[in-house]
Length: 124
Image (cartoon, rainbow, N blue to C red):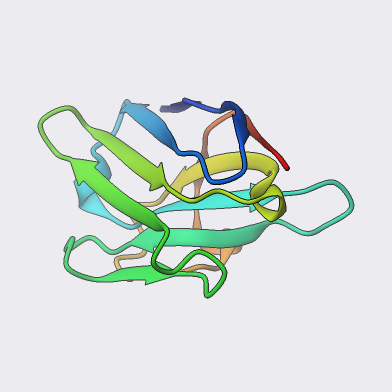
């Protein structure tokens, strides 16, 4: 079982990035998926999550209207489209998945599988 996150990088404020997370060894659509981030000196926070049924999603207040989570069942991948980035979005971003929870939970403890993290740096 493995999650592989990619797509991070350095971008100017106002720019966009799309993060990708590929799963192997299990099927993402069988449970909840989520994107989390952790900035230096801060706790990991839930950014955006999707329930087993894709119509149910969660977004942190700080990213609402700017970030969009999506899942491609045919490719077994999840994405995070990030627009209008600000320096406050700078962090290491992780994708998480679980087959035990079906709701769009933002609690990191609910997730069983994690990607390795991808760095997002937004310059002012």
